[in-house]
Image (cartoon, rainbow, N blue to C red; front, side, top):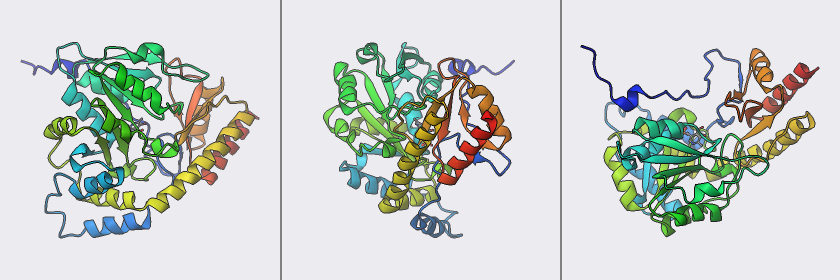
Length: 353
Ligand SMILES: Cc1ncc(COP(=O)(O)O)c(C=O)c1O
């Protein structure tokens, strides 16, 4: 007799993450990592945490020191922060804790946005309702405000375009339907210039959660650390279902050191924002339509995007191509170093001759 599978899992189409090439030598502009190395203090903290004597013992199950550091800086309590193995884990915990299997719960999300939200919802027996955002301003459609979904995921800034939605619009999402949880996914917030403004929503609304990651502006994608901020009552439910030791000791130490290395990362973020403006202009001059982005990436539309993606890859320049009909004429390009950007532009020029 064959083993019966959980129906939600059996029906699930697995999420496919961006390509991580196995060969070396790529100019890698496809998964929105930082092109910059970790701060010296992070490398020191990793060495200190990675002694032979440390590995045989479990890490702090509550990531207390890291959470305390973040909590103090944001002006919230320790119990209002849950740390996870990347923000992907904390987003999954949201779905696990708040979607009720078999009850017809639905999540809301923009289109386009980070498509993992749909997969996470489906893992827990829910489905997704999408709200199309369109050029030129990619505004949140009116129908999204009062939709009776259980959880609404809003990436802000929203990939792959990079649109930043103002605080008042998130307030309205939260206020219009208090029974609906609003998850503001701020993976790219450090490139947007709005600082910690959204954290005030957590204080004012019972139904707002804000997630963040160390994978982008803190150059730590390889160590997998993210966190989510919200009312204690919501965070406590998610705490019950996370793995006891979801963050290893090296990741905890590295993330805390990174969080404290404010000047180093502020400088890199400034550079990335400057280079985003440079790349946007350079692409527009080459006939691409590039909406304003507030993330560490741009979305560049040109009719030959699909061929360009392939030809750039042959030259070992990797950008992200999405085959979805509303994105198929564009490339999402991560802001690399100036040298990487110049290599990309030279590649585009050579291919356009
Ligand atoms: C909007 C958004 N949220 C979350 C993530 C995942 O981040 P993490 O590396 O913390 O799991 C990404 C990754 O690209 C993202 O684009």
